[in-house]
Image (cartoon, rainbow, N blue to C red; front, side):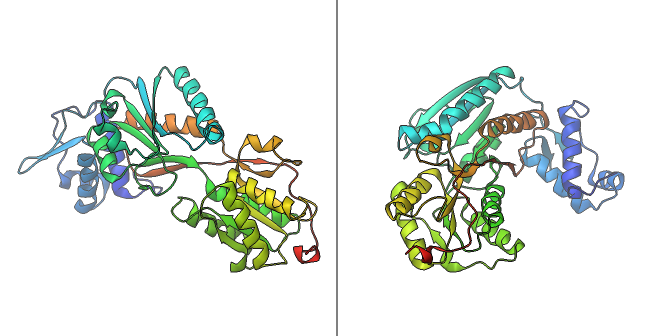
Length: 370
């Protein structure tokens, strides 16, 4: 009997895929006819046709006109996953690299070793795309059993190529990238909600948002989570309290602070996206002799550990669960290797909340200070 958690054709596709992967249906075997499958599952032939179409796309089934659908000779999984190829790009500075790449490599490598895998790393120049990397003689994806694309440029054709080669893969999209296939990343919606809720619970009602630039994968979700969280506390979103940064640099963080304070003198707190932008924002408040958290509260959405020693106070905010992300990447590769279906999914890993001391209760606005 089919459950109701997935669409009917997805459930049929998953069940047939498992039968193929477990050897119940072997290469060369003919699948039951559409009519037989429709009767067995209590669905229409159109639903069965959708399910078989998904198996064809995954390379598990080969349709032969006039004869039916047969299990593909390439349907059986290859040897157990042994090598994972991580492709990532260089960062603007050593500090940026240390914030995510170094701890991610540590956790991914440690867990991969524990599971019996080896890890191959390709560090690409920032301007080099996945396809250009291959054209210039980079290690081909067929070298590995699993590929992880992190912070590099790729497009839909690149992902289709990986699927055609039946290579398990995971993308970790950051900005201006194709949102399809299996993806893993931090739960930005949960992080934004944590930041806004903590400020609201400290009495703040005029809360600013310094959002990431347009083109970042979190841009729209940040706005939505910010507005919904305010609404849940009965606070109307004020467009004057929203600034879209040009980048996530310290310089643009300083500019965002000036823009936000000039737009609304009643503002008492802000959520700032990105550790570098938040650093610039906090430095600009200090230049204006605005005390944090005495006069103004700040929550950093996507902070990193280096901030703990960079200010007289410990910035409060969300911090990516990098170990959890690394484990989720390996879990997704394992899943693909076991069932053979890539699918379109996004595994969100909830960030950790760092309860620092940049947030305080308030009863007045910046207008009292200026």
